[in-house]
Length: 345
Image (cartoon, rainbow, N blue to C red; front, side, top):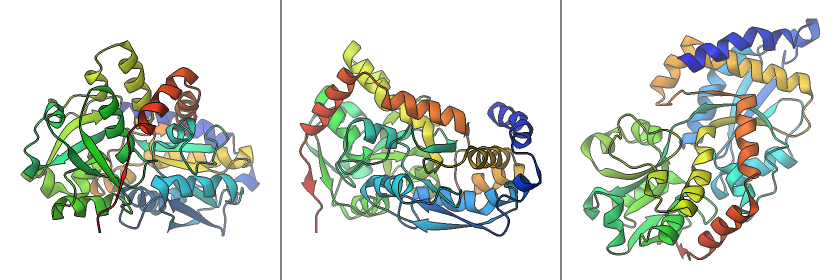
């Protein structure tokens, strides 16, 4: 609530900077498309549709807002679209995997976007990522995953469903084998149910609670690691990634990996948008997340609402892509050393 009050306090000032009759009509009669970097029904689709229901009410001219899906390479395709193709008049925005700045700095395949050039409008949540194992494996803690090989489903070698377990293999000695090629987290979840894979290397804890509340309640998924900047209150006994570090180098690596967790549910515009449009979108986003009606809808949608302003989101993204090069190269080498397998038929 403190974060929401702080955001609300800045809304009036931000709106004032967009003053004038023209600014009040900025989006009148227009349609804004939010591109979700996931399949329909995925968590980023959920974020996009939640914002589409409310953001227009807080923008000058009250535009219509629609959602389009652009899955591919763990959200990289949507980020590339915003960088290279999207119109720069504020009518095309995107929400995608929070780890985009990390993917950029490690030179992940296919990345063409530049995080420092994007117009960061804000972020909805700081929910941690979790690595989970399916209950039939018998795994209770991360230590158990050092005893034999465990097969995890992954979207691609670009995404965190692959990267998190790869780094644990290379550091603390877990024995994960990542099977790539699943077209989104929903299909990985189906793979766990069918016994194709034994766990999933990354998903927001808030997503598990909203999309599979029965799995959480019945203990069908067992969280073994949290990746983020703050521990989830309902996972008090699950270690943070940074808790697993055994030396200074691992502490640096795990802290670097954890930084992008605060960028979940980002709303991003293309490079080169006029400053007055960016200001109006940021002010509208801040007003939206401070609106009690939006907060109620977010709770019903299972979104852990812990928002960040556009300025703070941009600052965190810039911090990630400005990481020391020696650290980045070390992480890249660890990821590259872990081979991936193709998805089961």
